[in-house]
Length: 196
Image (cartoon, rainbow, N blue to C red; front, side):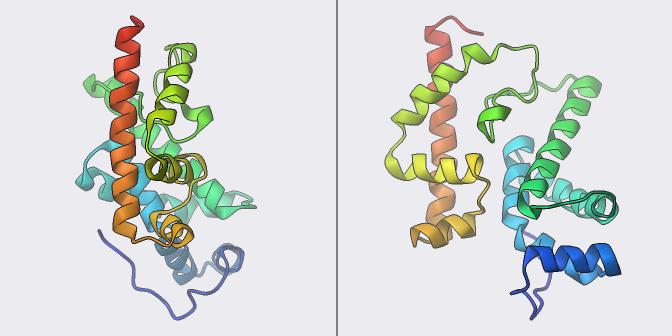
């Protein structure tokens, strides 16, 4: 995965870096912010766009957009704002592709309780929510915790690894396996209940 060069001022808070970028147009401050949340950005892009190449392209496009958009918005919690911004970027890309290329998008990839059906608004949330709740309960404790922290609370792999005192690779594995198990379980539940 690509990465910006780290600066010795990495300890500066999000608020300080954001203020430096917005008030002084300090590109280094934005690069440091982006680098701090790169795993979260890339991870979200990968979940929606499905391939590493597309996720990297989207991540770089997001960086370019941030240079323009951050100056136009009042941001109180950068991490939460960024999470929403990245998710919306990916959803817009998927919608455009579906419209232009008739891409078959799987709406089972979710990132928070409110986003259970972000792509296909016409599909019934009622058909998925019980399956999601049931299938979350079927995950082992490690997968369930990591999935919750990553998708529902928006923490990065690194943050989760620090919280759980585990290697980043183990956290990544728990999230990927948990997502796959959720997807398979939800599809099985929907098939069993006759939901298409």
